[in-house]
Image (cartoon, rainbow, N blue to C red; front, side, top):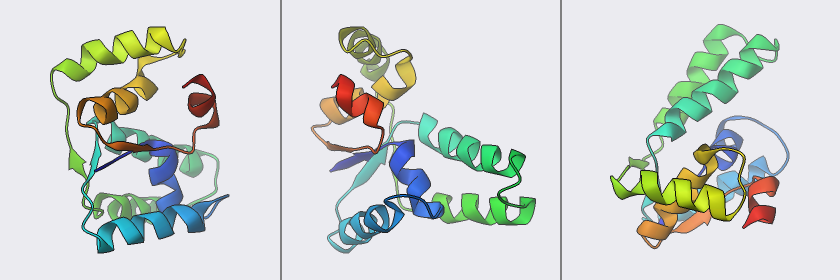
Length: 127
């Protein structure tokens, strides 16, 4: 089981550093029927990344909508067990994370014994 965060999911829809590797990992996970999970905030975070690119003029609205649809087509189980909120707060404090958002991914991976996929170097350094 894989828990994916927005730093990886954004690489599935945008061409940026390590996008090819992120897409390859996704393709292999899907071929192996490896369950992919994320907390409920993932779609909003990916939509926000797309919105920022739209605001910066890097994509047009039609392309942004297509990118969002492309992301939403990926079979990700969106899960938020009740205990994830408390554990997120504890983990954010334990690892001195500036916000609880990143800790949600860590907490969900921990609760469900999943491998966390992230490209967030700040988060990786903190853990």
